[in-house]
Image (tube, rainbow, N blue to C red):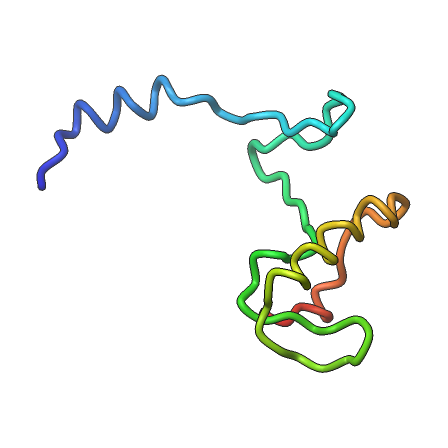
Length: 87
């Protein structure tokens, strides 16, 4: 497949330089642009570190459902520790 230089340049010129991610209440939460970096709870990882047992295991749907609720319960925590990553 060949994509012309002109098409690539036009696409890059018209692509938004960033987007806003909003909270469930409609408030701006993250500006995805430039060098901004955000960390989340990692529910897209193929493996997780079980918070109850401390064991690393493959992610399954129930764990994803549980992990996705943690940010709601721990609103004061703004970043995850890279040392706890289990990907």
